[in-house]
Length: 489
View 1: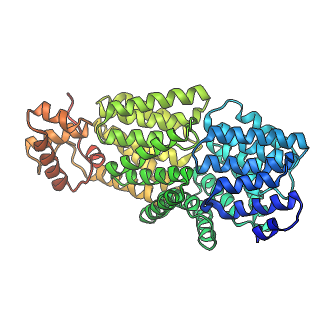
View 2: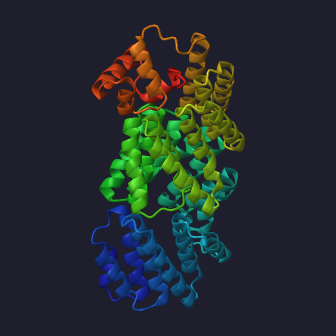
């Protein structure tokens, strides 16, 4: 239908409208993009306002499919200038919004100013709700850990998106609301928004990768972990097929987070290392946009790669401080504390975790995760009463906020603490050699270093740990670290 319009003797505005509709309707499945954009620019006949609209679409394409936010930001900047020259405030607001989005990703200090300029312009009814500066402002509030502010901005946008019948905008607003409710600890509401977004996506021709990402995050925290893994894998596979680098990163992040939480650090490492590579390829500089850094650090720690974890934490902490993204720091401190504990410094680790938990009172689920880490650390430091107190606090938080998978994890930790004998090192089923090997592995020592310490081969260490896992009913070093108290060197 669009090509029929273009083929007739129509005005430049009508031809551009048709071609832009074709670009928008194609979503991530657009083939021969360069030819279609060239045709649209030709149809614009040099008009600044029409050219600006096309440049915005090119900016989106450059960011999502080419993974080039610098080029995308430059295109959005050109679109802004052209729209302002033409006096087209609607297109100028859209271009400024896109520019602000990319500046935030790139860590540009002017992102807030650019967004303020977009918010100051009058908003036309023709602007897609998910492309408004109001929606971006809500997203940025989420990045800055202000979920209540984000929710207040998103609810009227949801009403508007549903009233206009824009399925894609409705899904995007529902997804943002789900994330806001999850950050605030309202798990039931988050599940409702995520499932509505997923149902609407599956009932239309929209790409499933955005809704799958949100579903994976929310289900993994508030619903069923097995279902969350299905969503994350589906979202990653679809994004890979569509060459959508933005949502490939996000779904792989969700997958890595879930694998780590379920005690599969080797699999988590594969997913999270690909996230790191994709984020570097896309030149994402702001660590608040997608918080994969502490998850990867915890994975590296679980696998005994302590120096790599320390390097990642140091780099991320420095970047976050330079950009003023202080909300990123508490999860980094949680990972740093786990690293301290892996090195045997339980006092420093416990202090870090206690301070981080205090700073996370407005984010109950993050606070619960930190208290759970504190419980494990206190147990390894042979402070069982403190470990029980922290585990109980975590269990109470997760239960109150209906974060069911995490509540089960905390309850399991608590039951082990209450049932375990007074001597945490008493594992009568283990031989002395097995116990010594397990203690070193629990402390985060690599297999090669364990072999050197015990003057045996690496294969002997691997075989010994396999027997330890089987005897204790464990599957990973993460579980081993939570079960065996490392001996003090």
